[in-house]
Image 1 (tube, rainbow, N blue to C red):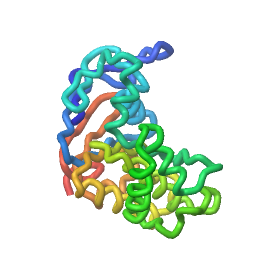
Image 2 (image 1 turned 60 degrees about the vertical axis):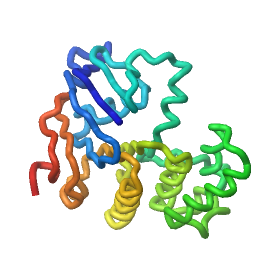
Image 3 (image 1 turned 45 degrees about the vertical axis):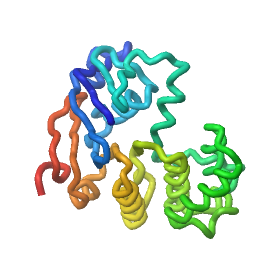
Image 4 (image 1 turned 180 degrees about the vertical axis):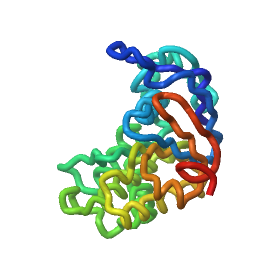
Length: 228
């Protein structure tokens, strides 16, 4: 699903590479954590996957296709295979929960009939069937992140990319969100979570790709600091 081949990323204003010679592969159906302290390179790696940034060198393969030199006009089609969740939710404040999720379907020109069928289904999946007519400012942080998750999966993406999805949540709510991500993964979606939440990584015992100063220093199943 995602493959980096000797990928480096260097920003013009820096002498050091944000990502240095990264090589790894995340297969279909995997759940993987990208971990590291702030500034380690996690967010840059996510931006490279999403084609928000271009690598300085190396190749990035997404769904079997070399996206390294993908034309800008093709990027939106690539992103349709990805659901994305951010730390700050990024919901549309003037739209209801239902409308926020439906908007993601209208962007890809889904039919109204398909929208009416799909949106209630994913709202049920994330436990928000009773919040469809509510606006984001009437929701808790955990509920807003559930809406963001529903929006990310409503078009049945092959992979879900979550960048610090629990960063603004209390511990109990964070676990609810991680449970949902695990359920989504069990349904067959590849899940990649960038985080520095050590307790979550330790308890979930999934594959961990650890980054330090742009270098991959560990890639194996276990906790944040090693096997558990």
